[in-house]
Structure formats: structure tokens, C-alpha cells
Image (cartoon, rainbow, N blue to C red; front, side):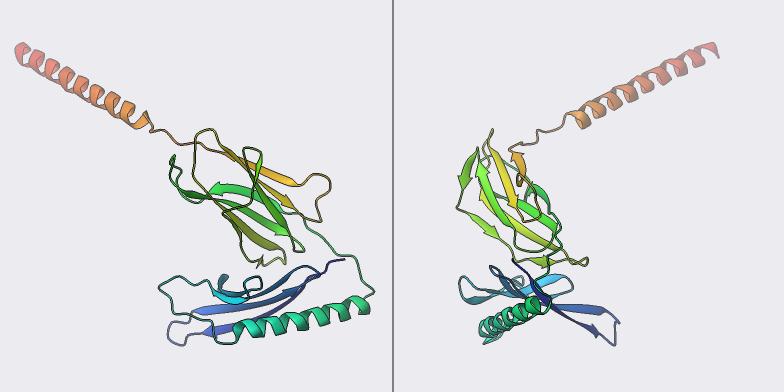
Length: 236
């Protein structure tokens, strides 16, 4: 049985001048197959440990000062080992209890406006699930895609469930169909699959038509006004 142990520490920092409150969040997670170590601020991730590449990853934008520090990754490894020890202790103490599960909700959408033959990214957003992990796979025209895809860290929500994002780089071509499939222990039967096909928006003719009609009616009104003005002068 897979269990996920989460340690969250919150601290509030108050600026005496502006009275703006900020919230730090620090997550250590572990299970039989998963591990995560992440630090964030105000709901946004600042850095995390990449246990595959064995390094710390600063996820702040380029204009921000780096926030990671020497020994961060080694500290993450140590914290995860402690998490595993605590997890085994809890499982024994509570006689390996069954887990409550929440199924994921999934959506798929492009990152940028879609233009044919212009590189873009598809995002598969998986939310509201508990516990981790989830597995995400992609297909293009019913063929499994294994390159140019990435998976974010698990993001904890305020209700105790999780978010995760899977991103696939692609170049839109007319007629292509992509799908994102999500596997989770709470799903009975078939996994959840969302599809997206390449659709490029055509320029709308509506504004031009309405503008033309408006101009025509305006000219018609001017002509009618001129006609009645001339008739009125003749009568006088």
C-alpha cells in the first residue's frame, strides 16, 4: 500500500510599513514510489529538489534573485529519508489503515494562441486528486508520445488534494489529434482521457459586416435628412 506523508510548515511575514502578509510553504513528501521536496511563497513554487538529476532546481523567473543555497539537495535527500522512517512508524502504529482517495479532474489546453507550423505547448492540468502519485501519458493521432514532455512537481491545494501539470511541446498541423491520459488509484475501470484537436481560429467577418451596415444606414439617414430639408425649404 502506498501512503504519502506530508509535512507543511507555514510562517507569516508582516512588513511593518505596508502591512502585507506573505505565506511560506515547505513540503516534504514520500511514499513507496514517490518523493518530493519543495519550498514556495504565497502559493508559488520557488525551488525544489530534482531526485532524478540529483540537483536543486530554482524555478523563480530570470529577473528574481536566486533563492537556493549550497547543500539544498543534500538536505532534501536527508529529509526524505526521515520522512520514509516516519511513514513506516505511522503505518505500524495505525495498523496500516486504508487510504481515503479522491479522483482527479483533468483538462487540456494550449499554452499560446495556436498558429499552424508554429511551435507551441499543450498543457494537461490534473487537479483535485489524493493521494499522489498520478501517471500521465500523451498520444498524437493515437500514437504514444515519449519525447518533449515534462511533468511538474505536485502542488498541494488548500483542501488537502493535489495539482500537477504535464506539458507537451508540439508544432500544430491541421487535422492532428492529441490526447492526455491520467491514471490514478481512485479511478475504477478505464483511466481518464481528454482529447484536443488542432483548430486555428479564422478571422471573424462579423465586425466588418456590422461596420458596413452601420455606415450604410448612416448615409441613408443623411440622405433622408437632406431630402426633407430641401422639401421644407421649397414649402416655405
